[in-house]
Length: 47
Image (cartoon, rainbow, N blue to C red):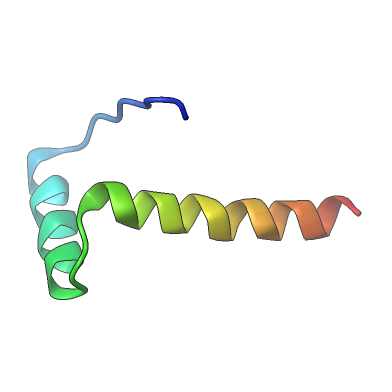
């Protein structure tokens, strides 16, 4: 597994944290799900 650092505007970070909290997850989990969904979509377009 690799560590990735991202920079966000403070207000955007706050909004993302609130959204994730409402869904019962943290920002790391959100991006892990997003990455897996994106990877699946990219892979299907390459074949």
